Length: 319
Ligand SMILES: [Zn+2]
Image (cartoon, rainbow, N blue to C red; front, side, top):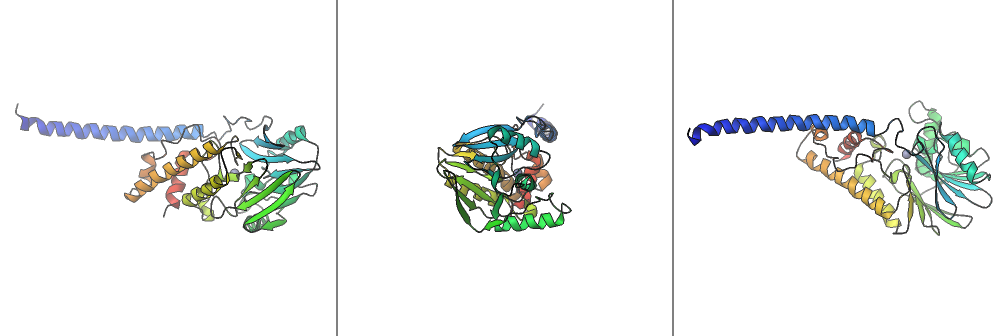
């Protein structure tokens, strides 16, 4: 047999092998995404407090606590004559959050700071402000909450029941007990009128959804937000923190600077992988099948969205 006679056969074999590999890859991608949907824990499995158990309390520093219920966080600061909350969770978690709070203090809630207008952060406003708490948010977050409350859940999240009565632009500063509280607006990042709350002396930051620990963030493209805006917002958050800062995420366990930076870098990795493929002219469907989020840890889908959804949102939001 001459060399020239075997070459076409080798070529055909190579093509067949390549085709099998491509089909296998696509099949594995589909399978992995199915697995993601299971691991993303839509049912709340894997979240420390599950969907029904007692809310999970993590002491942070200087009377500041993280209270997680169904993966949704409230930060509670216990003062001498009252309590300050950052975010208020939503039904049906409120009784569980209250029960956790009851184990820490019987003082009334005096302040609620909303980090942004999404339902899982404002849905407990009326419940926790029942003793007349002051509710604080950025002007644009408050406007959105008012709009959603007026629509009464018809075209948005369920109403907060209590719209923020203290609004600000850019930044707001107050004292609460021994704490200097600095609220800083982070524009065009996660939703509308996002803010992060810094407890200066304690060196604790409540990040809202600019930090999801062990989860992928929801990119609110419906509110005009993008992955690049989100990453820029995370950059501002990182600039506010140092190696000793305790960072309370909107969802997931408390974290530190190292985890925050790792999360930002991993998100940027997925963003860059999607951007590269989009630059080659690949369609969204094809990009999903090339699994650009393969570096994102499988178990880091508990508290946010699944990888497939995230890739779609990144693709949509890239210019
Ligand atoms: Zn959230």
